[in-house]
Image (cartoon, rainbow, N blue to C red; front, side):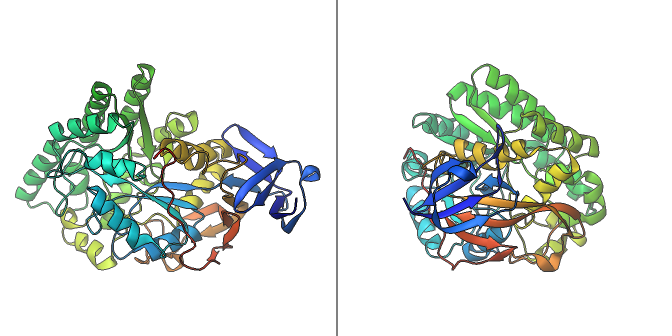
Length: 449
C-alpha cells in the first residue's frame, strides 16, 4: 500500500523507553511503527538522521484568549514552539461557564488556529445545575474551579458550590481542574499589605504564602475523595500537594498533579529582583523547593507539565514597577515550553521518557484524547515533534511569537530545541517557522463524549 509519509532513521521516545524505529502515515493517521527495513514505501520520506522524536506535545493549560493573544497568535506561538495540541482554559474575555458559552468559544476558534485544540469549561456562581455536565457532553476536556477569587469578571465559586460542582462532574465521569489557594489567607494578607503601604516586589510573595497553597491542596483532595470526582490540581508549586495526592491515590482517589516550567526554573529571588515580569499565581518558591519539584517530576509523582500561558501587554505588567500588588498575574509560556523542558533533559534532571510521559501521553490520557493523541499507536493521529538535542541558543524577547512580545526567560541559555513538528501527517513547523496556513488546526473533542 502506498502511504503518504514515512519517517525513518529516528529514535521514538515513549514513557517506556526509546525505540529505534520509523513510522508510516496514511490519511493523517499512523498506519505502522516498524524498523526502517520493514517500512512500506511512501510519497514522502523524511530521514531524520538519528534524531529523537516525541509523540505530539499537548499543552493542557493555555489561555489563548488572554490579551494581547487571540487564537491565531497563541496557536502560532504554540506551533513555533513545538506544541501540537492546546487545551484552552476559560478566561475573562471568552468565559466558558455553560454550554452556550462553550459553543460560542468553539465558533471563535474555527478557522483561526495553526495547531489542534480542545476546550476546558469553567465553574462559576450563578449558573444552573447541569451546565458542567452539559459542557462535558459537548466534548470539554475538563472544568476549571478556583478555590481562591479569580478576580473581576469571573464570579467567585465558594466551597459549597465547588462540592456541588464536583458531584455533578462525578455523575458523568468528568474531570475537575483546580486552582488551589486559600482565598481567606490571600485576601487578609492583601488587606494588611495595602494598609502598610506595601508596593514592593516581595509583597506578592507575602500575599500568597506557601501555606495558602498547601492548605487548599489538602482541602480540595478531601473534596474529591468525598464526592468521587476526578481532579487535576493545576500549576502546583509545592511538594506538599504532590505528597498529599500520592497518599490519596493509594486510597483510590482519582487525583492528578500538574506543574509548570516556572516552578522548575524560577525562584523567590527572581521575584524580588524582577518583580512583575515573573508575577504569576501561585508564586515562585525557594530554590530548594524548585529542586525538590524537579526530583518529584523525574520520580513520576507529577503527572503533567503545562504552560499556564497567560500573556499580558508590557504596559500592564509595568504597573507592577510602581505597585507589585496591582500588576496582573500571568506570564507567556508557549514559545519557551519545549526549549525549557528539553534543556531539563540536557541538564540531566529529566529523562526523555519522563518528558514523553508528562507532555504527551499523560495529558492525552487525563484529558480523554488518548489514543488519538499523545502516542505512537497505530490509528493515532500522526502528530510528531522532532528534536535537535545539540542546539544551543539564548532565549530572547525579540524571538517570541506570542503577541505580547516578551518572555520571563529572556537571556536564558538553553540546549535542545524542537526542530520540526508534524500534525496529522503534515509538517506544521520547520526550524521554528510555521509552514501551514491559518485554519489547519482542528477542534478535538474528548473521545468519550
